Length: 146
Image (spheres, rainbow, N blue to C red):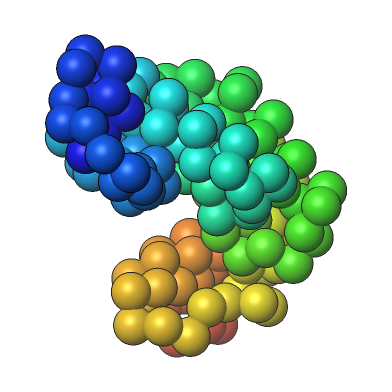
């Protein structure tokens, strides 16, 4: 049961809504404004949760609201300086904004605390390749002769 069902007359009962999961599902459907609402409700239930905050930042990014995403990622990093997801997301926004030096710092921080789960494998490879490119290194990790 979603928040939208509750608001617009969904089923009654004591069903507990998992706003975080609902936000993820809405985001996957491209319903970003609705996803933000759900993530904000999840944040009310679990104030300061870095995972929820990171999903809010990801949603802002998908909506083209980079300034809000940066602010949210920086908030996460202020409270949880080792948060790999916040370092990763912030690094790529900074790259788009032309802040390569700061992006490198965040990519390095992400890789220093990289997650070990299988889902993170592609993100780790992307971060390593991007960092290598930014440093001017070849595919073997050596400097490119130019």
